[in-house]
Amino acid sequence: MFTTTIAGVLSISLAAIFSFTLLSKIVERMVSLSVGIMLSTSLLHALPRAFESGTDPRSLFACLLGGLLAFFLLEKFAILRHSHHHEGDGHHHEHGHDAHEAGKAGWMILIGDGMHNFTDGILIAAAFLADPGLGMVTALAIIAHEIPQEIGDFIVLLNAGFSRTRAYIYNLLCSLMAVVGGVLGYFTLDKASNLIPYVLVLASSGFIYIAVSDLMPQMQRRATLKETIPQIILVSCGVMLVLFMTQHQH
View 1 (cartoon, one colour):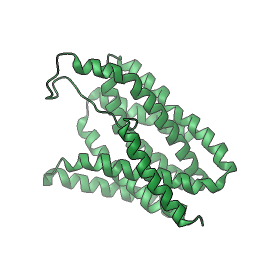
View 2 (cartoon, rainbow, N blue to C red):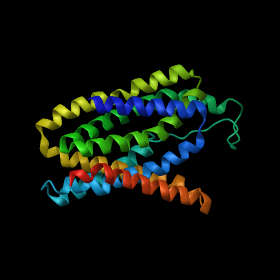
View 3 (cartoon, rainbow, N blue to C red):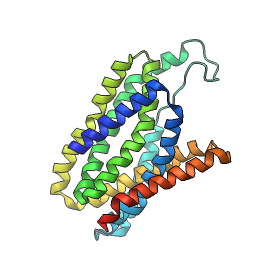
View 4 (cartoon, rainbow, N blue to C red):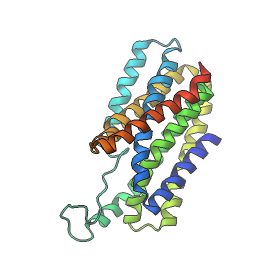
């Protein structure tokens, strides 16, 4: 799957560039853009596509509810989001505590990312099978979400003692799990097209959950008018970008 490969390599490479050059302002801007892309992809494109398929709406809503609760539980088990602590973060730990904790967490982060990327590949495949335009915006939404997440992972891996090259290579290998998921999803879902609406709903539940429970609270912590205006503009840009990319599909 060419698109899943590009999505994985691009998100990892951009995350590495931002992490290694510490362009924190760009990272913060990416969060706002991600919210607009993820919510509009889910609510304006993927969910309508699923409900227009003729599948029973009650079963799709049940799938949406199940997806939201599943992502909540996954987050509880720290598969989707990891707590990052760094030396000098204001917490009173003995010297070296955070590096030690990060060292133990480093491999778990890579395993969690591999699982997450495998799921992303299946979601991209399902979106492409439903509609090539939807596949493109789904891949775009995943890239926009992955960059801030991968930056956090890079920081933990570097803090755990990984070299920059090693952290990049291991993250890149994890990102290639999206290709495995994409190929598996393409050949499996192609033979079971009735499952595509459910996979689209699950993808939407993931995007909505991550945007509302993780990314938007980050934005809310920046409450001044000076910080809020760029957020609103970038969320709107994300929405307009999805609308522009999908308008020819309607």
